[in-house]
Image (cartoon, rainbow, N blue to C red):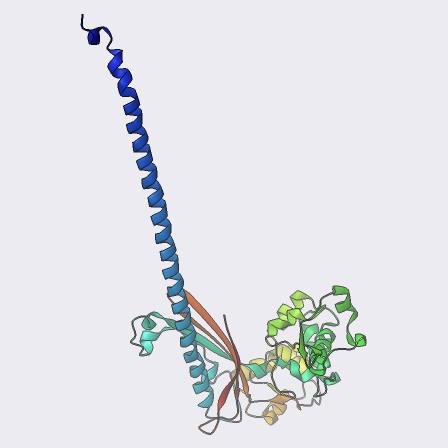
Length: 342
């Protein structure tokens, strides 16, 4: 009988190593393909992330550039004021700019035309100016401290809140504060306020934005958040409060004999017919609150807060700025004192 017929296993035994070799080669090829796919995918992903990052940076830069248009819009409206003796909530500057596509405003560039802009102007002198708390030498003014204390009390802030803020501002404008001026509440909190070194003399940084009140040592965070809607820090002391734009709480805090109920009534009357002058305010008080001094009251303003938002595809950029108007009309000018992009 043929030997190959008698032992067929000889051929199969010799073929097994070759079969295993072919299987190993296939597995190696699959591994190489998978590895190459992973490497290529990683390269494509990195390229995609890089492209999106560049696009986002480009859109963010364009959005920030477009925000300058919000400033120009605010400056134009403020400068075009037609009556120099009063500023009221019925004026054009007080009407917010609703979300508007820039292609509706004449922009023709393909990418820019997809952007939207919105904004609003607020009278900064409708708030209490914290700079009024201290004089040029950094001494606390008792009359202005009393105003802030009445405002804090009406807003249910803890006792001593006004003193904490006044001490912090006095320290900022007079240099390093003596230990005797540091409130016990701030010492107990153990919070170190930021310092600025000028000529080797440490000096506290004054707040700029209303929400910076949260950095006052010892202040209650909830009180700081509430007060932030009623205060501002201007670069000028002894500024007046515009009763055409001030909320009732500011009115009642500024005039000691005016109750909050009477201030609400006065504000309702003002919203129907704005005040033309300080004498007009005096007449409409009609004895409410007694014989009140209107030394810190006015009907016009020079400082305004501007808020603007530009949306361009995925980029959303917000602007806040403080503007100072020297006069109205063609002879006036509107300067940007500070701005912050977010």
